[in-house]
Image (cartoon, rainbow, N blue to C red; front, top):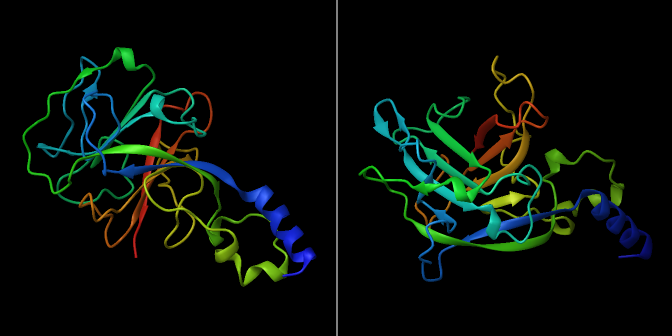
Length: 235
């Protein structure tokens, strides 16, 4: 690999790389703090909130993410302390707003939260505590590359610019089919910005279809910041 090639790679990397936080699932003793980040478990909510339901059935706890534990706040999460995510018990939602087949709750202050009483339900998802791990360089999948690449880099793109999969805050989405297509609904006229993803996990007994990934986006401007969207892709 000649010097010109190396310089081109570094320049492209400088333009494309993003930092990310990957949440590793399990492998250590669960902490006693109810605000700990969990996969498959939700412990906290506002005093007036109850366990979310869909079509008369309790949703399944998919994740609780304590953002105050993170090494840094990724874009779109700077003003929040905690996220909780629930998913419908029967089928995956398709182009629906939060509350219809899925539910995302975002909290700005941990001090406002109280224990959330879990509703007895049979869930296939296995709960595990999660720990953050920093990824200094995460690169976009080919479909998200929006700069001109030197021809010499095309064939080796995936080896030179890896995209990190997993339960990931920030970075670039791990695409499976194409660029994310957020639902074009009348209540969501402004395209959300990608914020984090939840990957399928054999360990946690969760899958978006066949080996898929769920992407979560947030309204990108003031006045739309409390609007969230979900899209997912699978093989």
